[in-house]
Image 1 (spheres, rainbow, N blue to C red):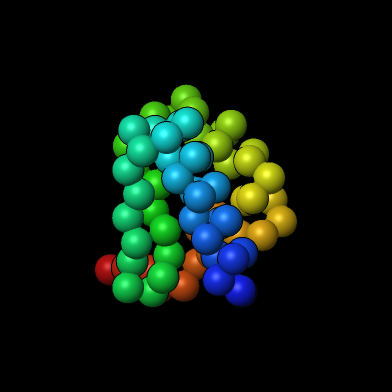
Image 2: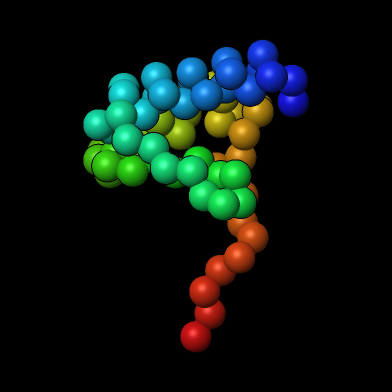
Length: 67
């Protein structure tokens, strides 16, 4: 991903965080972005955003805690 595309994606993530939550995001050491403080009733609309439909996966999998 080019620097310009990455910058545009981060700006879009900031817009989404402010639109559906309180603007808070967190980055993981695996370079994932977490949207925190998003009410459950706003999740369907947030997940329907175009950026999550074709560019970035929601909950892509990977490491999971197992008992």
